[in-house]
Image (cartoon, rainbow, N blue to C red; front, top):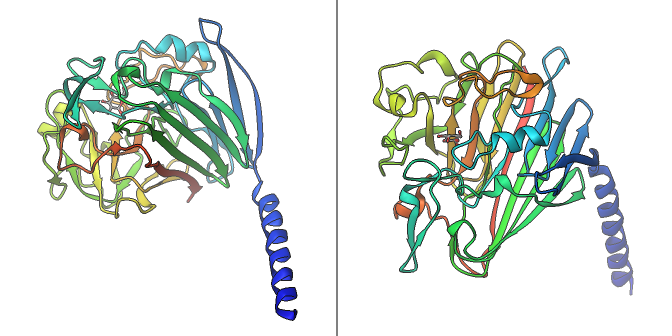
Length: 376
Ligand code: GAL
């Protein structure tokens, strides 16, 4: 009897603790409002996640991180991501052909698939091409260009999209969920997906960070916890090699300014027009670990990137040329921002020795990336 009574008390205590825990956890204010309409009339909402000094705004169109305000070392706030002021800006920039993908969720397959084709379970699949001979970021009708269903969750927003069998050329009905939460400067992105047919999936977020909130990122100091990277050919498709970064301008194992070696006479840098490569993370794939750190000496802002993914695409904004006018009409100049896209390696479906991106019915794709902001 006493034992049962004690067990009951423990159970009640646990329920109470869980309840308190839940309320204690809900620190971030989450609100939503209209963010305009697509040309076809589809309404777009924007969710604002505010946690004291930090604020993230996420649009249901493309799951785009529209703005991300963080304090500098003196407490002064700035928006540290590129983008546009309104949904019209994103729609106008989007042309399905190698656009900038500012802040968007990328799917079904982040980065390139060579010749828009791969074979799965003995069947060949052809994808629409949108980057020369190749398919980039899910093709011309990727996850960046759809309106996601959204619901508020504790400290954030959850987005959901059901991509139909054959959509954008990929097999299987794929249900994808992306949950953004913001707690004390940690923007956490949790991606999940299930399928009813064997398929490939590789989701990421394409935020362009500039920790100074202006100018370029050449003086940002970058650390990448990676001893190897995957070199590319002229179409930016991996050659299949895993190359050591040692003694190359790709060695960011110690903090190094992005601009320090970007103009070195190096074939890979020439092919990428700067850095636009996948680094093979040293951490054990599947375990959340620090992958990268960026430090801006001028503002003191620090961005740490944590992920459980095997790779990270460091892209130094090489295709920005000032022709895009971003927020407030500001031209997005060469190297105005950098992307750190946590991912599986580009073109994995055509490289059996790269970690597999296959997802089978009954399995759950699940991955977490945290963009963690602080100052120094
Ligand atoms: C990056 C990719 C670049 C470029 C960019 C979008 O993820 O690596 O080559 O396509 O997206 O402009």
